[in-house]
Length: 330
Image (cartoon, rainbow, N blue to C red; front, side):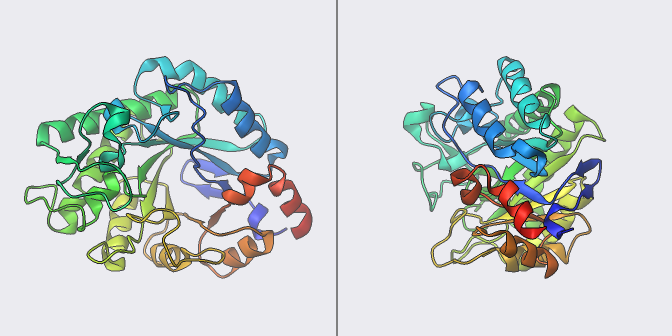
Protein backbone atom coordinates (compact mmCIF):
# COMPACT_ATOMS: atom_id res chain seq x y z
CA UNK A 1 0.00 0.00 0.00
CA UNK A 2 1.22 3.49 -0.78
CA UNK A 3 2.31 5.64 2.14
CA UNK A 4 -0.29 8.28 1.29
CA UNK A 5 -3.16 5.90 1.98
CA UNK A 6 -1.79 4.27 5.11
CA UNK A 7 -3.51 5.12 8.42
CA UNK A 8 -1.79 7.18 11.09
CA UNK A 9 -2.39 7.76 14.79
CA UNK A 10 -1.99 11.28 16.20
CA UNK A 11 -2.64 11.20 19.92
CA UNK A 12 -6.33 10.34 20.29
CA UNK A 13 -6.99 11.02 16.59
CA UNK A 14 -6.88 8.00 14.27
CA UNK A 15 -6.81 8.94 10.58
CA UNK A 16 -7.63 6.41 7.84
CA UNK A 17 -5.10 7.95 5.42
CA UNK A 18 -2.36 10.59 5.32
CA UNK A 19 -4.14 12.67 2.71
CA UNK A 20 -5.38 15.97 4.12
CA UNK A 21 -7.87 18.41 2.67
CA UNK A 22 -6.39 21.64 4.03
CA UNK A 23 -8.47 24.64 5.08
CA UNK A 24 -9.44 26.73 2.05
CA UNK A 25 -11.81 29.68 2.34
CA UNK A 26 -14.96 29.32 0.24
CA UNK A 27 -16.92 32.45 1.31
CA UNK A 28 -20.05 30.26 1.24
CA UNK A 29 -21.25 30.99 4.78
CA UNK A 30 -23.27 34.15 4.07
CA UNK A 31 -23.51 37.26 6.20
CA UNK A 32 -24.40 35.36 9.39
CA UNK A 33 -21.43 33.00 9.07
CA UNK A 34 -23.61 29.88 9.18
CA UNK A 35 -22.94 26.62 7.38
CA UNK A 36 -25.61 25.64 4.87
CA UNK A 37 -26.42 23.40 1.89
CA UNK A 38 -23.86 24.94 -0.47
CA UNK A 39 -21.06 24.36 2.01
CA UNK A 40 -22.29 20.84 2.80
CA UNK A 41 -22.14 19.93 -0.90
CA UNK A 42 -18.65 21.41 -1.23
CA UNK A 43 -17.19 19.21 1.49
CA UNK A 44 -19.27 16.15 0.65
CA UNK A 45 -17.99 16.16 -2.93
CA UNK A 46 -14.33 16.36 -1.83
CA UNK A 47 -14.44 13.72 0.87
CA UNK A 48 -16.58 11.16 -0.94
CA UNK A 49 -15.15 7.68 -1.32
CA UNK A 50 -13.34 7.59 2.01
CA UNK A 51 -9.88 8.38 0.62
CA UNK A 52 -9.32 11.68 2.46
CA UNK A 53 -7.97 11.00 5.94
CA UNK A 54 -8.58 14.45 7.40
CA UNK A 55 -10.65 17.41 6.23
CA UNK A 56 -9.79 20.70 7.93
CA UNK A 57 -12.69 23.14 7.72
CA UNK A 58 -11.78 26.63 6.55
CA UNK A 59 -10.80 29.33 9.04
CA UNK A 60 -13.73 30.39 11.21
CA UNK A 61 -13.78 33.51 13.35
CA UNK A 62 -13.99 33.33 17.14
CA UNK A 63 -15.11 36.97 17.52
CA UNK A 64 -16.77 39.37 15.07
CA UNK A 65 -13.74 41.65 15.46
CA UNK A 66 -11.60 38.79 14.15
CA UNK A 67 -13.60 38.23 10.96
CA UNK A 68 -11.32 38.15 7.93
CA UNK A 69 -13.82 38.52 5.09
CA UNK A 70 -17.48 38.45 4.11
CA UNK A 71 -18.88 34.94 3.78
CA UNK A 72 -16.50 33.51 6.37
CA UNK A 73 -17.72 30.81 8.76
CA UNK A 74 -18.39 31.78 12.35
CA UNK A 75 -17.74 29.94 15.62
CA UNK A 76 -18.48 33.11 17.59
CA UNK A 77 -21.81 32.17 19.21
CA UNK A 78 -23.94 29.16 20.03
CA UNK A 79 -26.23 29.61 17.00
CA UNK A 80 -23.55 28.03 14.80
CA UNK A 81 -23.53 24.65 16.55
CA UNK A 82 -26.46 22.92 14.84
CA UNK A 83 -25.50 23.96 11.27
CA UNK A 84 -21.94 22.85 12.00
CA UNK A 85 -23.19 19.52 13.33
CA UNK A 86 -24.71 18.84 9.92
CA UNK A 87 -21.41 19.78 8.23
CA UNK A 88 -19.42 17.39 10.41
CA UNK A 89 -21.88 14.58 9.73
CA UNK A 90 -21.68 15.06 5.96
CA UNK A 91 -17.90 14.55 6.05
CA UNK A 92 -17.78 11.78 8.64
CA UNK A 93 -20.22 9.58 6.73
CA UNK A 94 -17.48 9.14 4.09
CA UNK A 95 -15.11 7.74 6.71
CA UNK A 96 -12.94 10.85 6.85
CA UNK A 97 -12.14 12.64 10.08
CA UNK A 98 -12.76 16.37 10.27
CA UNK A 99 -11.58 19.26 12.43
CA UNK A 100 -12.57 22.91 12.44
CA UNK A 101 -9.99 25.65 12.21
CA UNK A 102 -10.67 28.53 14.61
CA UNK A 103 -9.10 31.92 14.04
CA UNK A 104 -8.84 35.61 14.78
CA UNK A 105 -7.74 37.68 11.79
CA UNK A 106 -6.00 40.36 13.84
CA UNK A 107 -4.63 43.13 11.66
CA UNK A 108 -5.51 41.14 8.53
CA UNK A 109 -9.12 42.16 9.13
CA UNK A 110 -10.66 44.96 7.13
CA UNK A 111 -12.24 47.84 9.06
CA UNK A 112 -15.12 47.97 6.59
CA UNK A 113 -15.93 44.29 7.19
CA UNK A 114 -15.72 44.33 10.99
CA UNK A 115 -16.97 47.88 11.55
CA UNK A 116 -14.07 48.91 13.76
CA UNK A 117 -10.30 49.36 13.73
CA UNK A 118 -8.49 46.01 13.44
CA UNK A 119 -6.25 44.93 16.28
CA UNK A 120 -2.81 43.39 16.50
CA UNK A 121 0.00 42.84 18.97
CA UNK A 122 1.42 46.22 17.94
CA UNK A 123 0.43 49.12 15.71
CA UNK A 124 2.36 47.66 12.77
CA UNK A 125 0.89 47.48 9.28
CA UNK A 126 0.06 43.93 8.25
CA UNK A 127 2.39 43.01 5.36
CA UNK A 128 -0.36 41.21 3.43
CA UNK A 129 -3.71 42.94 3.92
CA UNK A 130 -5.99 44.91 6.19
CA UNK A 131 -5.93 48.39 7.66
CA UNK A 132 -3.48 49.87 10.16
CA UNK A 133 -4.26 48.17 13.48
CA UNK A 134 -4.19 49.40 17.02
CA UNK A 135 -2.27 47.50 19.68
CA UNK A 136 -4.31 45.22 21.90
CA UNK A 137 -4.62 45.98 25.59
CA UNK A 138 -4.04 43.16 28.07
CA UNK A 139 -7.71 42.96 29.03
CA UNK A 140 -8.59 42.53 25.34
CA UNK A 141 -6.05 39.74 25.01
CA UNK A 142 -7.78 37.94 27.88
CA UNK A 143 -11.12 38.31 26.07
CA UNK A 144 -9.64 36.78 22.91
CA UNK A 145 -8.24 33.84 24.86
CA UNK A 146 -11.69 33.22 26.34
CA UNK A 147 -13.26 33.46 22.88
CA UNK A 148 -10.92 30.79 21.51
CA UNK A 149 -11.87 28.55 24.42
CA UNK A 150 -15.59 29.00 23.85
CA UNK A 151 -15.12 28.39 20.12
CA UNK A 152 -13.30 25.14 20.84
CA UNK A 153 -16.21 24.04 23.01
CA UNK A 154 -18.65 24.74 20.19
CA UNK A 155 -16.55 22.68 17.77
CA UNK A 156 -16.69 19.72 20.12
CA UNK A 157 -20.42 20.21 20.72
CA UNK A 158 -20.97 20.14 16.95
CA UNK A 159 -19.48 16.66 16.75
CA UNK A 160 -16.16 17.34 15.04
CA UNK A 161 -13.20 15.03 15.59
CA UNK A 162 -10.92 17.84 16.72
CA UNK A 163 -10.14 21.55 16.53
CA UNK A 164 -7.27 23.36 14.82
CA UNK A 165 -5.92 26.68 16.15
CA UNK A 166 -4.84 29.04 13.35
CA UNK A 167 -1.42 30.68 13.76
CA UNK A 168 -0.42 31.42 10.18
CA UNK A 169 -0.97 33.62 7.12
CA UNK A 170 -0.55 36.95 8.97
CA UNK A 171 -3.52 36.38 11.28
CA UNK A 172 -3.45 37.33 14.96
CA UNK A 173 -1.54 34.44 16.54
CA UNK A 174 0.99 34.50 13.71
CA UNK A 175 1.43 38.24 14.34
CA UNK A 176 2.19 37.59 17.99
CA UNK A 177 4.74 34.91 17.06
CA UNK A 178 6.60 37.07 14.53
CA UNK A 179 9.07 39.71 15.74
CA UNK A 180 8.21 41.67 12.59
CA UNK A 181 4.68 42.44 13.82
CA UNK A 182 5.14 41.97 17.56
CA UNK A 183 7.01 44.91 19.07
CA UNK A 184 5.42 44.64 22.50
CA UNK A 185 7.49 45.26 25.61
CA UNK A 186 5.17 43.48 28.06
CA UNK A 187 4.83 39.76 28.81
CA UNK A 188 3.40 39.08 25.33
CA UNK A 189 6.42 40.36 23.41
CA UNK A 190 10.19 40.34 23.29
CA UNK A 191 11.73 36.88 23.50
CA UNK A 192 10.15 33.81 21.99
CA UNK A 193 8.63 32.84 25.33
CA UNK A 194 6.75 36.15 25.35
CA UNK A 195 5.70 35.91 21.71
CA UNK A 196 4.18 32.43 22.20
CA UNK A 197 2.53 33.24 25.51
CA UNK A 198 -0.78 33.95 23.77
CA UNK A 199 -0.57 30.64 21.89
CA UNK A 200 -0.06 28.70 25.11
CA UNK A 201 -2.93 30.54 26.80
CA UNK A 202 -5.19 29.80 23.84
CA UNK A 203 -4.21 26.11 23.84
CA UNK A 204 -4.93 25.95 27.57
CA UNK A 205 -8.31 27.69 27.15
CA UNK A 206 -9.32 25.34 24.34
CA UNK A 207 -8.17 22.34 26.38
CA UNK A 208 -10.22 23.61 29.30
CA UNK A 209 -13.31 23.67 27.09
CA UNK A 210 -12.86 20.37 25.23
CA UNK A 211 -11.11 18.16 27.78
CA UNK A 212 -7.81 16.31 27.72
CA UNK A 213 -8.79 13.64 25.17
CA UNK A 214 -10.19 15.84 22.39
CA UNK A 215 -7.63 16.38 19.59
CA UNK A 216 -6.15 19.89 19.34
CA UNK A 217 -4.11 20.76 16.24
CA UNK A 218 -2.23 23.94 15.44
CA UNK A 219 -1.54 25.45 12.02
CA UNK A 220 1.87 27.01 12.27
CA UNK A 221 3.18 29.74 9.98
CA UNK A 222 6.72 28.40 10.07
CA UNK A 223 8.33 30.96 7.78
CA UNK A 224 7.50 34.64 7.34
CA UNK A 225 9.63 35.17 4.20
CA UNK A 226 10.20 38.78 5.17
CA UNK A 227 13.22 40.45 6.73
CA UNK A 228 12.79 40.73 10.47
CA UNK A 229 10.40 37.78 10.66
CA UNK A 230 10.71 34.45 12.43
CA UNK A 231 13.78 32.25 12.12
CA UNK A 232 13.81 28.47 12.02
CA UNK A 233 15.39 28.09 15.47
CA UNK A 234 12.49 29.99 17.00
CA UNK A 235 10.01 27.92 15.03
CA UNK A 236 11.54 24.65 16.19
CA UNK A 237 11.48 25.84 19.81
CA UNK A 238 7.88 27.04 19.44
CA UNK A 239 6.89 23.69 17.93
CA UNK A 240 8.34 21.85 20.91
CA UNK A 241 6.44 24.13 23.29
CA UNK A 242 3.15 23.57 21.46
CA UNK A 243 3.65 19.79 21.46
CA UNK A 244 4.41 19.88 25.18
CA UNK A 245 1.20 21.87 25.72
CA UNK A 246 -0.86 19.05 24.19
CA UNK A 247 -1.08 19.82 20.47
CA UNK A 248 -1.31 16.46 18.65
CA UNK A 249 -0.58 17.60 15.06
CA UNK A 250 1.34 20.59 13.69
CA UNK A 251 0.06 21.78 10.33
CA UNK A 252 2.94 23.58 8.58
CA UNK A 253 2.44 26.47 6.17
CA UNK A 254 3.67 30.01 5.54
CA UNK A 255 3.60 32.89 7.97
CA UNK A 256 3.23 36.61 7.39
CA UNK A 257 3.50 36.40 3.60
CA UNK A 258 0.77 33.78 3.35
CA UNK A 259 0.34 30.32 1.90
CA UNK A 260 2.03 31.15 -1.42
CA UNK A 261 4.99 33.47 -0.74
CA UNK A 262 6.58 35.08 -3.80
CA UNK A 263 9.30 32.97 -5.35
CA UNK A 264 8.29 29.63 -3.82
CA UNK A 265 7.24 27.04 -6.37
CA UNK A 266 7.21 23.31 -6.91
CA UNK A 267 5.63 20.43 -5.03
CA UNK A 268 5.89 20.73 -1.27
CA UNK A 269 7.55 24.15 -1.35
CA UNK A 270 7.31 24.40 2.45
CA UNK A 271 9.18 21.07 2.85
CA UNK A 272 12.32 22.64 4.40
CA UNK A 273 10.08 24.07 7.13
CA UNK A 274 8.08 20.89 7.75
CA UNK A 275 11.24 18.78 7.80
CA UNK A 276 12.83 21.11 10.37
CA UNK A 277 9.74 20.99 12.57
CA UNK A 278 9.40 17.22 12.17
CA UNK A 279 12.96 16.75 13.44
CA UNK A 280 12.12 18.79 16.55
CA UNK A 281 8.92 17.06 17.70
CA UNK A 282 7.53 13.55 18.04
CA UNK A 283 3.98 14.43 16.95
CA UNK A 284 2.87 14.19 13.30
CA UNK A 285 3.46 17.09 10.92
CA UNK A 286 1.34 18.10 7.92
CA UNK A 287 2.93 19.62 4.80
CA UNK A 288 0.77 21.58 2.33
CA UNK A 289 1.84 23.63 -0.68
CA UNK A 290 2.19 22.99 -4.40
CA UNK A 291 1.35 19.27 -4.42
CA UNK A 292 -0.70 18.47 -7.50
CA UNK A 293 0.25 14.87 -8.35
CA UNK A 294 -0.09 11.73 -6.20
CA UNK A 295 3.51 10.74 -6.89
CA UNK A 296 4.69 14.06 -5.45
CA UNK A 297 2.83 13.40 -2.21
CA UNK A 298 4.23 9.90 -2.01
CA UNK A 299 7.78 11.13 -2.54
CA UNK A 300 7.51 13.81 0.16
CA UNK A 301 6.31 11.19 2.63
CA UNK A 302 8.96 8.63 1.72
CA UNK A 303 11.68 11.30 1.98
CA UNK A 304 10.58 12.13 5.52
CA UNK A 305 9.53 15.71 4.80
CA UNK A 306 6.25 15.25 6.70
CA UNK A 307 3.85 12.65 8.08
CA UNK A 308 0.75 13.85 6.24
CA UNK A 309 0.27 15.74 2.97
CA UNK A 310 -2.27 18.45 2.29
CA UNK A 311 -3.58 18.76 -1.26
CA UNK A 312 -5.44 22.02 -1.66
CA UNK A 313 -5.93 23.65 -5.06
CA UNK A 314 -5.84 20.36 -6.97
CA UNK A 315 -8.62 18.97 -4.78
CA UNK A 316 -10.54 22.22 -5.04
CA UNK A 317 -10.47 21.92 -8.84
CA UNK A 318 -11.10 18.16 -9.02
CA UNK A 319 -13.22 16.55 -6.27
CA UNK A 320 -12.20 13.13 -7.62
CA UNK A 321 -8.48 13.74 -7.05
CA UNK A 322 -8.30 11.38 -4.02
CA UNK A 323 -9.94 8.51 -5.86
CA UNK A 324 -7.69 8.98 -8.90
CA UNK A 325 -4.63 9.20 -6.64
CA UNK A 326 -5.44 5.93 -4.91
CA UNK A 327 -5.85 4.19 -8.25
CA UNK A 328 -2.54 5.58 -9.56
CA UNK A 329 -0.60 4.60 -6.46
CA UNK A 330 -2.15 1.15 -6.14
